[in-house]
Amino acid sequence: MAQYDVESKSTISRAIAVLADEGILFTDPLAPRRGVRVRARTEFLRPIDQQLAAPVEVDGGRTFEEFSFLGSGELDVEVSYARREASDLADLLGDELLLERTYRYLVRGTPHQVMRSWMPDRIAAAAGLTDPSDEVAGRFVESWLVAAGVEPHHVSLTLKSRLPTAEEAADLAMPRALPIMVRRRVVFTAADQAVELSTSLVVADQITYLAEYELRTPC
Image 1 (tube, rainbow, N blue to C red):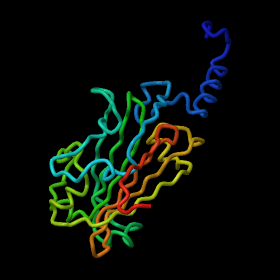
Image 2 (image 1 turned 180 degrees about the horizontal axis):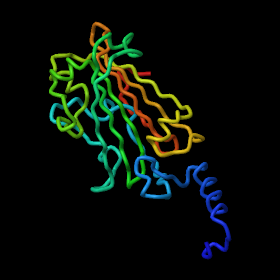
Image 3 (image 1 turned 45 degrees about the vertical axis):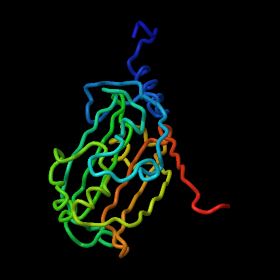
C-alpha cells in the first residue's frame, strides 16, 4: 500500500473493481490463485465461417492458431464432453440423447472464446467422437459428419451481439457490462434435418469477423 501512497486496502479494492468493470483487469473464477491480472485485449481477424476460408478436409484443415495467427505456446484449449437430453434443443435436433462438446480457448492466459457443439450422440459415436482424446485439431464438423455417414448440405449462420449471462461472463472471465459476440451455426442435410448446432462466444472487443467470397454471376 505504501507503494501507492494509500492507507487502506479498500481504496485499492475499489480501484481494482472499477478497472475490472471496464474490462481492463480480471480474476479468473476457474483459477482464483492466479490473482488479479491485466486482461489481454488483442483483437483477432477471423473468417466469419470456416467454409469461406478452407474446404472440408478429413485429416484436419487450418487450426485455431493458424486462423488467428498465433505462435506456438500462445493458445491453450480446454475440451470437455457431456451427454445431455435434447430438452430445449429437441425442436431442432430431435428428441434424443446429445453429445455436448465444449472448447474454452485461452490466448496468452486470457479466456478468449467458448465454443459448444451439440449433435445426436448416435451420430457422434458413428463418427468416432466418444471422448475428448478423439479430437483432431483443425478438423471441421462437416468431415466428422461425413465419417458418420451423414452428408451435410447447407448451413444457417447468425451473428448477434448481446450482454453475457452470469455463467458466460464467468467462463470468459469478463465483466457483465461488456458485450459478447454470439455466432450460431446449424448444419443441415439435404432433407433440411439439422444434424449439428454450435455456438461460439467471444468478448466483442476481441474479434472482427471477415467474409470473402467469389461472385457466381456478374453484378
